[in-house]
Length: 409
Ligand SMILES: Cc1cc2nc3c(=O)[nH]c(=O)nc-3n(C[C@H](O)[C@H](O)[C@H](O)COP(=O)(O)OP(=O)(O)OC[C@H]3O[C@@H](n4cnc5c(N)ncnc54)[C@H](O)[C@@H]3O)c2cc1C
Image (cartoon, rainbow, N blue to C red; front, side):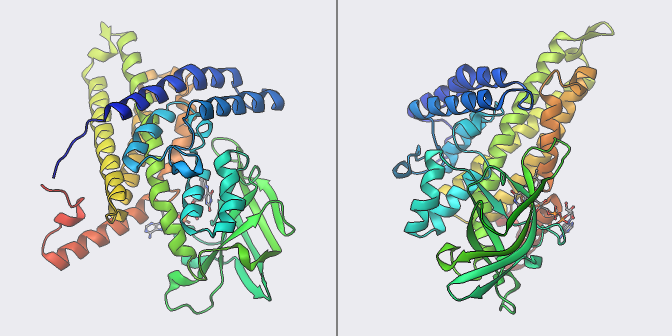
């Protein structure tokens, strides 16, 4: 077995190209946009989609999709490197068309959709002509436990009639369709086999967007939806009856890891800023970089970022090699989400009042980072699953070794 962390010359060249594209095209475009609430809508669209055209022309489009779908055909390890460059800027993933939730939905459609569904729904997503959303969470029941989902789909001839209530549906107001999870089975053999996924066209009669949920980072695109007698044809079932949970799990593995890749970029930005500020800010006879208290913050952040990168690369390696990756992705998701919050927090601390202001991107990054600890699996749920697997490994083999990444040490 060889362990080699170097990139091939082609991949190194790709990484440099992505970095240059983000620096030369996306960051200037982002600066022109400024506050999206302040800029004229037409101008906003023109800048954003102009950048997308440039990404397509540069061959930096859909890094996560196979070439036959217009993508770059990268594996997950390669993707980690591209996402970690793309997310150095807020709009980078969107410009390259690898942003959540579309990116996870594309993976899901690629794996689960019929040919007709792929043509109708996946193709426009890949071409950048449509956006999508994923509708699972409900206000009345714990999103951490999908067996509690109350939205129902009842069969009526060739159609399904759906009633229910969803919220925090990211991108719903811009989406052309939703992948919706609803309960179809009353008494399944397993509680996990109660739900089924459907593709819902937006707009559709019965799909009622009642509000944008105002969050600590503003009201930017998480909708509450009331679903009333929405009719969906049989042909829009995604996967089989009762496979909604399976599909959700399949979707969340790579999607969670892709979040981690983008969070690494954000944390690296925060650490760069922390070091830069500490080298230039002077107090009590020296620059901050010479204070032990500040060095500890820099050292802890460096070590945690290093751990995060290794965890993400290893989980990506396991996906690429067809190995079971649930535990590694779970551990990476938990660790990287918490690392992100700690590193941004320390960077704000080192910046003092400036860090708390909106003059630097840190405050904005901090607001976005907070959701990472509970969305796509809350910390405690990941910890529960990780512990269960570790206990099972010990019970089965008398050792916890396989649960700690099954590494050769
Ligand atoms: C910005 C944002 C975007 C989102 N986008 C989407 C989207 O596009 N589509 C979608 O369907 N959903 C979306 N969500 C919802 C998200 O997936 C849920 O918030 C998440 O699944 C948790 O569900 P919940 O909020 O109902 O919390 P709950 O399930 O009520 O959990 C609350 C807390 O309870 C604790 N907890 C839960 N289970 C356990 C346990 N077993 N042991 C110990 N503690 C536990 C944890 O601390 C957890 O944080 C989004 C949320 C946010 C904030």
